[in-house]
Length: 134
Image (cartoon, rainbow, N blue to C red; front, side, top):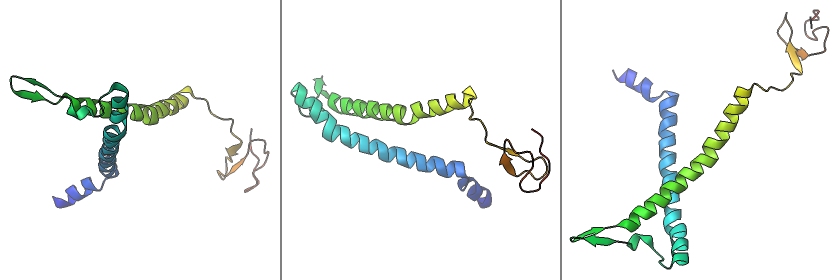
């Protein structure tokens, strides 16, 4: 039973996913810190309030921390923008390029006898000297 669990854990996909989650959390923390320490004060300086986390309103004795929500929303939007422009847009370009079928003209071909790569214009293989058909 433990052998199967060990094989599952050591699969590349599980390890890659775990690393991705850890990196995602770390990246989210960096963006949250940047929003809290740089973006929010900058917006606050322009708007007159230096810290959104202090924005609150009270209804029937219950205090609503709307400022923390605004900080979290700015952090989320910042992460979403970065992920979109750094990951999604380049991946879409790569996928579209692969789907379009545009390939570069090959400069080499495989010899039919020994499967070595030889120039396209070659009449004989330079490795096995067999006649190559074009």
